Length: 293
Image (cartoon, rainbow, N blue to C red):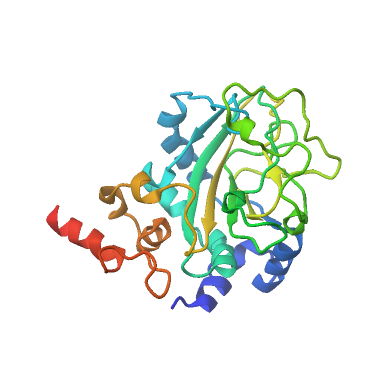
């Protein structure tokens, strides 16, 4: 069992601004989100930009209104550089994910989203909607939003509806629909414009954590430069991951990750034995393959 006192009280204190973890969690539970500024140092930000440069250099645009036709998305990040495996195990994000979802939580998805100038507002959505469990209900996810670039009101900062994680109903005006995943669908104007929306303006290196039931969307980029975030998303150990990490992160890469990163992508067990491989703990299968290699 993990030492929660060590994890919560020691490594993350420097980011809590003198507050207790319990106080921050209370705010997280009430508002559905919480922001911590200047978490990642400049060198890490530079390293992330360097690791993503070959992928973003391909300039593959989004396929539909949801992905963003003037955006680049880079999926399966734990397979694309050790720095992303370090990011998904960042102690501040994990403290909230494990507190909400359990020690055996999993990484459901991890992607970079790069909004270019001219990008339009994304449809409203909440990140654990794929579980199709009627609202209101407990959240089945915690999403981290790492500001790799500064996010501003002009360059497409994520927009949120505070407290919406408690709302009933699975639809609001301007919410994502099946048609938004079609290449043919083009939205006219901004049907999701709302007076109660807040733009999450953050300096580079900052972190927003959001409940899986919080309504949010990517904003419109009306600046002359792209803005990038990375969003690792966590889910309970007994639910299916959004991205198939067992295939996205091949065993040859997985065996080089830290033990905690391997657990998050699926080399772990939800008690008593959910997730086994051939009757054994999945890490045994990885160890067997390593010995054969």
